[in-house]
Image (cartoon, rainbow, N blue to C red; front, side, top):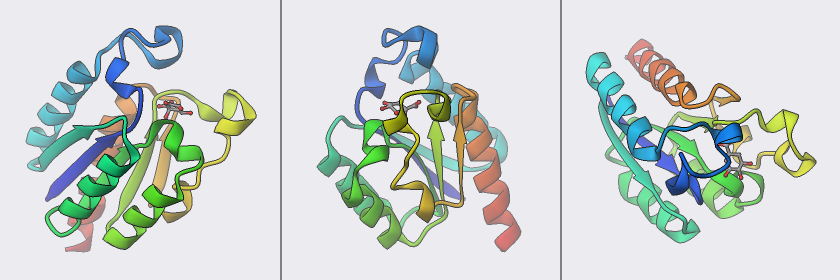
Length: 146
Ligand code: DQA
């Protein structure tokens, strides 16, 4: 199976950005762990990050027919990007939303996700491990369907 892992705005600064909230690992370090787990699971993984809504949408459109599932941490776009939601819905793929922080324990504007209703599920508050848990769940879900 092939999985696309997307990270949205400001996640390129992980490691430096509010480490008490988001952890001390950089995105490259997290991605290395994702690639390693993908290999262990026999899955092909591609990771992409952008600070730009349109670039994320282009990436979703370009990969929609090439991958079997998507893992996405949309960053702040989670809370208001109907455009990313529409692109994900159009891809007609199983999607898992990941947040490093427990968004429900934070500001009220972070409690609502416009992406979550079109997802298989959501993982929040488990830090970088959330991506690996999402990968395991998505690969297992896809293999079960076959
Ligand atoms: C985040 C939570 C969002 O509210 C925030 O805007 C982010 C990161 C997380 O991973 O916890 O950029 O998606």
